[in-house]
Length: 455
Image (cartoon, rainbow, N blue to C red; front, side):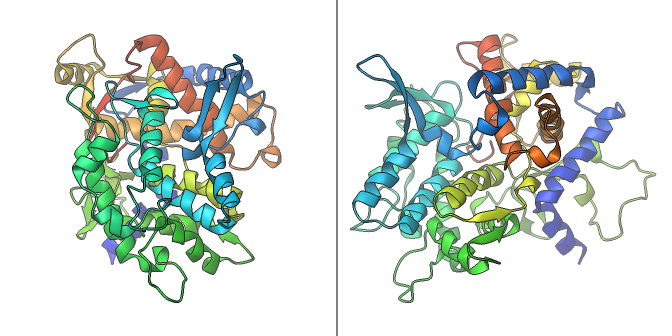
C-alpha cells in the first residue's frame, strides 16, 4: 500500500513542486550539498528576465505560450529585405483545411507531430546541426524540431498509404535507428547526443500507443486504424465536464500514465514500477535520528524528487494545440511547474544564484577533461538532481518577481502566466547568457551526459 501511495504521488504535478520546494528550504538553511545558494542575486535575475520580456514583447500578456509551437515559428528575410515570421504549424493547418481536412483532424495531426517532436527534443549537444533546404542551418531545439517536421511531412511516422501527415503505432514500432539517423543527418562529423536512444524512445512510444487504446485508440466504431497520439483529443472529449472543458488532470493522466512505457526501464523504480524522470536527491536524505517520515512512505521514497521534464514540456505543448486548434478550455494549468532543464537552470548558475562547491566543480572538470570547458555530470548525478530541483523552485520565485515588476495582482495575470515567463523569459535569458559567456558553443555552465531521453 505504501508503494502504491508513493507511486501515485511521485507521478503527480504537486510532487514536482513540493519536493523541489523542500530542496529550496534546505538551500535557505544553508544545507545544500553541491551548490552555494545566494538569494541576494534573485532580484538581478528577475530584472534581467523582465528586461528581455519588455524588449521583445512589450509586456508579459503579449508573450506566447512556452511550447513546441514556438520551434516552428521561424524568422526569415525576404528578397525585399523585410524580416517576417513564418508559422509552419499554421501554414500546414491552412493547407489541410484547403484540402477539406476538418478542424478536428487537423488538430489531431499537430498533436501527432508535437508528440514525436517533443520526445526527440532532449539536448542535442553543441556539435550537431541540421541543414534545411528552405531555412538553412539550425541547431539544438530548433534543428531537432525542424528535422522531426521534415520526417513527419515525408510520412516517416505514418503507416497509412493515403495520409502521410500522421504518427501511428505501427510506423513507430517499425522505425529503425538508421531512418532516424538519416532524418536527423547524423554522421561522424555531425554527432547527435543519444541518437540511438531517441530512436528507441520513438519505438517505445509506438508500443505505448498500441497498449493504451483507451487514450490513443480513437472513437471510430470500426477500430480499423492504428493508434495515434492525436486520438487523445477524442479521449479528452469523453472526459469533458462541460462542452470541451477538461481539467489539467485529464491531460496529465494521458501523458504521465499513457506514456509510462516510453521511459527507459533503467529509471528509478518503486515496487517494480518505473517512475520516469524521478531521481534520488541526497539533499533530502533524512538524518539517521530523523523519525519524522510518514508511516505510509516507503523507505527511500522520501528523498525522491520528480521532474517529469519531457512530460511537462509535452503537456505545455499539447495545451496550446488543445486550446487553439481543438478549442478546449483547460482548467488548473497553474499547477504545472517550470521546466528543470539546462537553459532555465543555467541562468541561475551564470548569474551567481547557484555556485558549484569546489569538490563538485573539481569532479565535473575532471570528467570534462578540459579545465576550459564547463564541468560535466551524468543526468543521475546528485549534483544535477540538486541543480534541477533548485531550478524548479527558483522559477516560481522569478515568476512572482515578474508579477510584481509588472505591477500585476493575482487577478490580472494572463492565462498560463508561468508558461509566458519561461518563454519570454527565463529560457531565453539562459540561452542569451550562455551565448554571451561561452560563444560559439553556447554551452550551458554545466554540461549533462545525455542519453537523448532526459533533457
